[in-house]
Length: 304
Image (cartoon, rainbow, N blue to C red; front, side, top):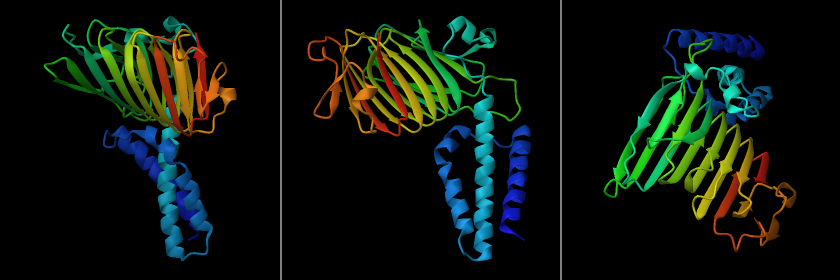
């Protein structure tokens, strides 16, 4: 049997099995992370062309067929998500807003001075939108969300773990994957965000952001920062992603980049010893430090 016949036969078998097992609620997969590893398929195709023993070629073809089936499923899930159009007014973005239900919240007490949020997300659309009377509100039409928290320092410091690695079902329209996160504006926040294939709009201008760390896969992210805290440190490690960061004009900003981006990507900044600075950096009461690494394909800083 030809290697190509093995590949295509197993590809359709694997694809059909994945769909069937999902429909039977036997298989639950977070497809968001598969985007980062698609070059493996090309590597396996290359091995299958080499002059290798036939049995080895067939094994490689079988593995490639499985990976291709998973990649196709990830593309289908990602493209069928009801992503929010960030260019419109919020009232028109969430046309199904009435179908949202509050999934989880953590109560706020006045003695909470610091809070950290560790957010893990697969493939979904996330909005940081409003201030919350609770410490955190999570609103979504999808039920599989896990939230946990712990306190330390006499309950002045709260650590929150929020798992949004949504496991969708093929051809299922019972749930949408839009998630709204509202934070309380009183504590000083540290945010650690690990996301896969995600569209995310973060209006953090109301919050006191001390640290923001984003580890992203295939994403489109728009972040708005404020000047509520004297010093904000932003670290971005990303794959094939488009980033827009909006910062106040009165804030001083420093950018450190190891991605090959040039000064043309940072209009209004001056370069000094390999870093980019706004002219008011030294005198500004609020300073924002941005460190960029990874394969960011597009990065824009907008001063508003």
